[in-house]
Image (cartoon, one colour):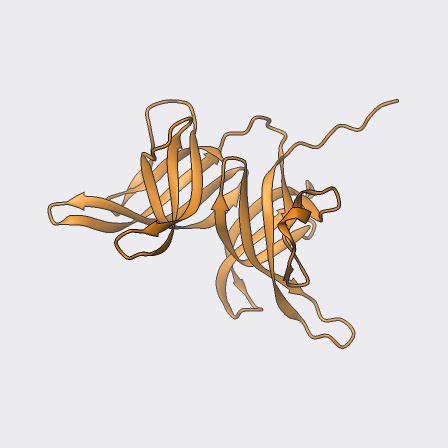
Length: 218
């Protein structure tokens, strides 16, 4: 996804105001992926910021977590490696990101990747029968009574913000982010009905930017 990014810390120290990455006004390509840590030989998730058209990242964030999202701005929190006199040092870092939208009226389209806790075949996520929710995404921390602890809550709401969310994920995590899409996973709360008790089922969204098509006028 294309975004402008500002760092909130310098060598682990919280800055008075976020420091924008790069001197150009153009946005960067922001990617989140799993890579192999050559030192530990184990999979590691990283966020990488790359100039558009380039193949080499200028900075990266290790083990990024999507902790806040509103009005197309979001915060990724994780670990940054800096070099000091003793070598590589791991420090806290957060990126304040703002998506570069091609159209200001865009919404989020979230295709549901699970049904009743069962993961759907990937080929079905792109056909016209896929289940999806459109609206504005918000992500915040909250206390989830179903888990008995604080966690990350992702919600998609329509224009009427006072209404209940159209869809929600608790214990939400960012799985990956590519040039055009990103994936969120977590749990869906299912209310009790008939003889079935309330339960949490694995769920996820495949998210992309979306513009509502204007209705045809005859």
